[in-house]
Image 1 (tube, rainbow, N blue to C red):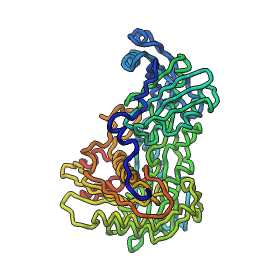
Image 2: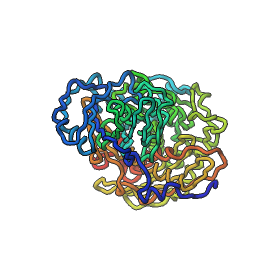
Image 3: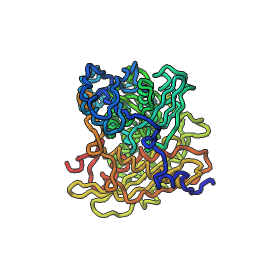
Image 4: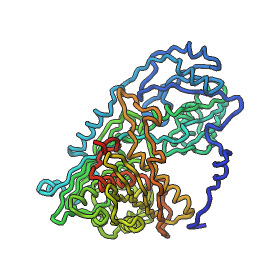
Amino acid sequence: YINTGMAHIDLTDLVTGKATFAADVREPKALVAIIERPPVVGGVVKSFDASAAKAINGVVDVIEMPVPKGAPQFQPKGGIAIVAKNTWAAWQARKALNVVWDDGKNGDYNSESFKKSLLQTVNEPQAHVREKGDTTSVLAKSSNKLVADYYAPHLNQAPMEPPCATAMYNKDSVDIWAATQNPQADMKTVAALLGMDESKINVHVTMLGGGFGRKSKPDFSAEAAYISMKTGKPIRVQWTREDDIQHSFYHAVSAQHIEASLNEKGNIEAYLHRTAFSPIMSTFQEGASAPGGFELDLGFTDNPILAPNMKLERGEAPAKARIGWMRSVTNIFHAFAIQSFIAEAAHKAGRDQKDYLLETIGPDRILDVTEQNASYDNYGADKDVYPLDIGKLRHVIEKVAEISKWGRKLPKGRGLGIAAHRSFLTYVATVVEVEVSDAGDLNVIKSWVAIDAGTVVNTDTVKNQTQGGSIYGITTAISDGITFDKGRVQQSNFHDYRVPRMSDSPLEVEVEIIQSDAPPAGVGEPATPVYAPALCNAIFAACGKRIRQLPIGNQLKA
């Protein structure tokens, strides 16, 4: 079976409509619940009038949800639940609710002002993460420096099926049917909310309907279980697209500041990088503003640049929203900054992107960042079994350059961009070809990916995940992001939270799998973080417009 292509065992059920997703579960006599949640994290119901809602035909009950305690964790967000005989009645009744909110301490959250504070943070000295040589002194004396700030907004996982769960409460147990990535978390969260033993929580996992990290946070399962306990009836909690966009656990907003001193040959002599972002730690620890090591380890602490002088620092940033995992997590903005900066340095030095990238990461070697006063968890894997192997990173760069025919002559308005990154123990390099019209219209022509994920069993799965991860990476570049004003999310559906359409995507994502006898590594996430920098580097090659802040938006038309 190793290194062969095999059809997905669920494929027939998926394409014939037989597969059961969360919203397909129809427990007999189950009622439907739709919840009006606080628009601001930490907000609570000040008062509400449910008389108009209760008057709607089909409405069975109106229930006030419990107020979450302490850090968000995976608790329900709170609010008012409408329980009805069908989804339509519940939806209409929610519209008829009259709720007055107390927004609490996060009612002042504004994306623009927060962006300014993040950029200010990274432009000042911050806490030590990793250090080698005397970066500060070399930068101070340098006459040839490159300085850049990078920014990426909050993002939403946007699974195609919004969260949904059905729960049936009995006095001594609870059964839950949910599209969950983490049934153990469902058990723990529901048990804590209902005051039951975890062994009494039975979780039945449906097809996922897309997860990307959102459905590892089972607040929706806990909502269903709580309402079932209060009503004594089986309950299906259905989130709408608007619920998902406005009440999620968001990918962190971030700012990065990088400085480098270039020697007479244009090579990086000293490198300073600061990162600041609202940490996932805030979901589990109230008031946490400093990132955990597991977040810094994702593309920051393990920076592959070979320079005689290097200093990595991390700032602090409060969390004014629920922060959670999204496909490839903090690798997204760390890879964007590092790979964009290397391409900028290549241009400043008058060098080819690909050649300069290879020279910048240096020769084949095993990188041990702990030798540079840094701690590094290596995704929880044994460093001897899964070393940080620069040779493997070089190999995927060389391979993707080969299959994309890097260096070929392109028509006016077209450009190639390259980026490479190690994440989840896997090495990925991507080349993107784009066309930018004189009017600033962007057309992604084709993408190429080389991936070294160790021993590959099902090659079809690896190609599918790599192609999907690449398309998902387009979202990180073109989406308008999630923005806040007065603590409220300003987006509500796909009309203002953009995900890639077919017209945004390349006609083909060609994948080259590197044959390896190394132990298997991850494939679901590693193709995502390299896409935005490769795309933006291609844009610069096509039209000379440098993208340092995401989303790309109208920057090409400015």
